[in-house]
Image (cartoon, rainbow, N blue to C red; front, side, top):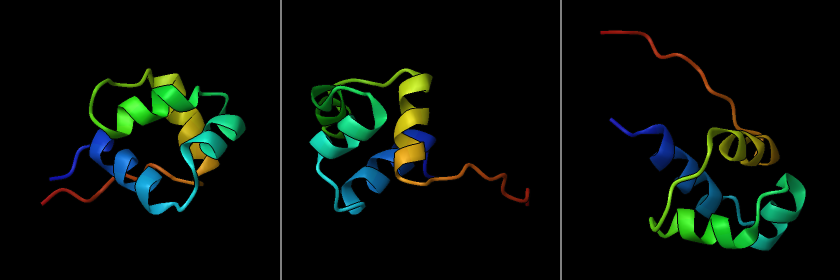
Length: 65
């Protein structure tokens, strides 16, 4: 199962937006986004939330098996 971190990384890459633009719109430093996408560091939840808003992502519960 994909983690929230993996899903956010994938969404950033697939968004077609530059890290600079995501950073500008979210208030998260583009260098932080670069290091997150490359797996060098994690993000604070607040930063992840702001990036998710820019990318118009939504967290939804999945049905349990």
